[in-house]
Picture 1: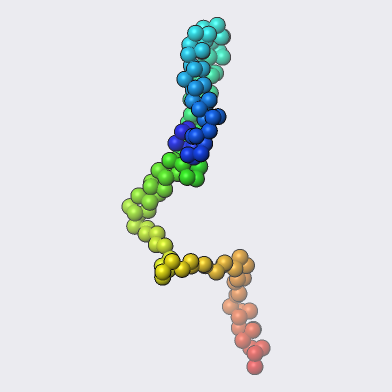
Picture 2: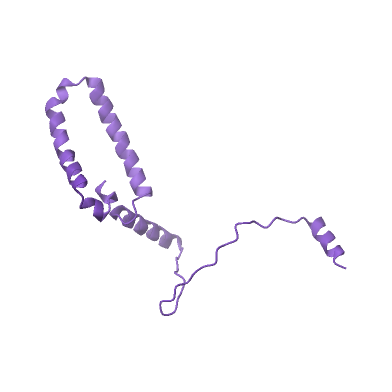
Length: 125
């Protein structure tokens, strides 16, 4: 989880409190866990493994921008694109000029059948 946190989040008191709970709660359950029913303990175990798997997939595929996980994902994608031969080139600009691309027309051109195309040519006499 810490790989998916921004630097600002890691400096916050909430993050420090969560780190303390990360290490303290297992100790609490180690001493009091034997009083819980076995079904509850099994449910917690399975639920935690399922949640860890989900978090792994989410952090790997949709990381927080600017986090270590985002940088790692960008490196993985760049390496994969390099392996496939895809080269991403930035638009060239001279002396720091910002290049602005024109927005593409969202309206799709409708296909015209051959018969209609011939009729339009005949009317233009």
